[in-house]
Length: 190
Ligand code: FEO
Image (tube, rainbow, N blue to C red; front, side, top):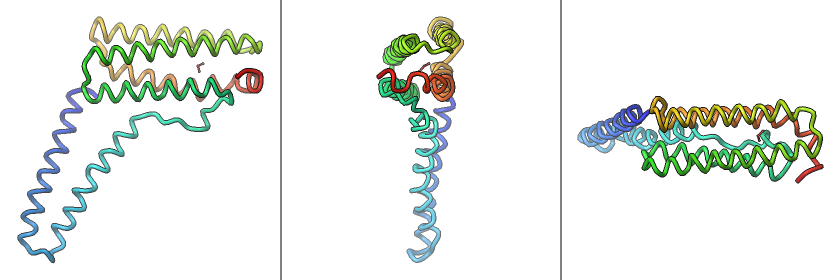
């Protein structure tokens, strides 16, 4: 979500809450036994709940079906998803640019560390899909570096573009390619 869209969305919610509050006050003029103000109060309670639900859907959640059956790799994947959520939260709340950069650098750094660890395990177990998998890791690092460069240097991308790319790539990769090596590595590495 761009800063403008976020601003518009917050403004609409603020206006909606204000309108509801005014209508509730006016509604009570009809009498405390009139159902209208009570219906409006229910709506006032429901609006932030719905808003929170919509916002939480934008975050990635660990699902046990993502497990590759190797504890250290599952831990890495959980950590990476958590870092993406952290980056998304920071971008949503218009955090200081320097802090966004720090989180982004940490995320890319941990992704590289994770890829190296995973590749070592694949080599150790003579996984036949090693070359293809490694190429995917390299392509991802190349792409994410390009995206960050476009965000950082050329300003032709927003931090949200980077977050969306990372989120989509990692979830698909963890749930796809990483699952394929599981039968070859499970029980042989920790
Ligand atoms: Fe878990 Fe292939 O990255």
